[in-house]
Image (cartoon, rainbow, N blue to C red):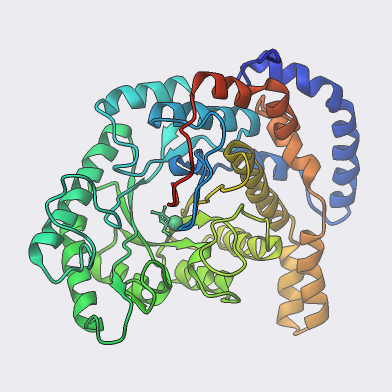
Length: 433
Ligand code: LRH
Ligand code: MN
């Protein structure tokens, strides 16, 4: 077997970077000169990009699947501790993923305090925890077949509320500051569910969960147009999510999962509205062409991702009140090495952020004011068509990460080492994880 190296080892990363540094320095200086002509200081952008972090989905480091099949890859993590190890590799090589988001009970363990210690030793921390009332667990009292916190049976609602409160308890041990509440509750046929009463049950149950939130926590309400419900979903769109957040209280916010909208929906507009309402709680970044495809961020429509970051940078720039969205990835890696996909996606988020940071906002504002449509769209597009790769690589280098994360990861032989250490199950079964 090829010699394997620990990809989190700084010496190994430094050795792999060495032959790439002079080219990077030349490209960085070229870009710096071109940006200077636009009145943009490249070092300022690199520092902001360096400070950007996105949370990894614990459920994303294993191979994902669909309802048809899941084809496990080599060396899959078998438990949350091994998921942490893989997340540490992603952060060591990109410098952009200092936190991860757990999903319960998928990441259940007997000792969450030990998990927190292990994470700290790997220079990782925990972002929002995710509850799960869209699957029935073994030995569960009541089924979620017809819903969870909006079920017509109060006993089922109570069970689902209890689970969410337990997720908050676990999150407090881990140092999380938010609970992401996505529920699959809805209907497959007209008439199956009373649309108004279901929403009222949602508000009443969510209020019980809200009561259990510590003062410095947030409740992140995640809307989704459809799936697994195929006619109506209780929290189907940003309007329902915003109404719920405003009803529940100041700790309730809206989480935007990019894949949870109909194709062609203007998501950057939704972001602008949620910023205005001071209820933009965060994102589940991914990409999609048709439905909730959970593909790698920036892989299908990088311009859309740029336009979303353009709204975020503009809000930051105009000092929008109460603006601190949580950035998280939520993807399913069915045919790629999850570690490579997550590294690539983190870099694509940094790219969209860097492009949004170099937008000449005063100039753009003037053209918008003057209704000079052509010059306004060109000014925005100039930022998107600028290759900011040297800034991203420089930000990684400055943090001791890899100039080329994928090449460094492959050179380490980490996946082969995992395959030797973590025997893979046989056959393929369906399901997203
Ligand atoms: C629902 C969702 C939600 C998670 C799940 C894994 O589609 O986006 O955020 O709980 O995926
Ligand atoms: Mn999501």
